[in-house]
Image (cartoon, rainbow, N blue to C red; front, top):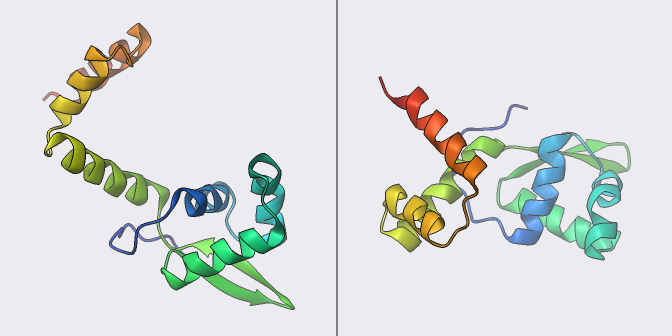
Length: 129
């Protein structure tokens, strides 16, 4: 299955995002394999991961393919599509849809390092015709 570029489904929580992130890095994992990647760092159990996987399947974000007595989970949403949609929602909600306001806020709050500014400048040069 190929992940979709559509990000019109239900919102994904921070906990669900951690599971998606593990599956975006390596699709077709079992619940136990996902747990190996995320449980220790978050203090989760296998039962927690199974609950999150189930929710993501219900939301249409993951496919669950039977594999004997277990399931293999694969993302149905491309990481880029999800991040793009969340970025647009953030800019819309917090900055009235203005990406310029977001960058200005980051610059004014000293959240941008000189290296960040150099990367933004290089990106802008690439985007200009």
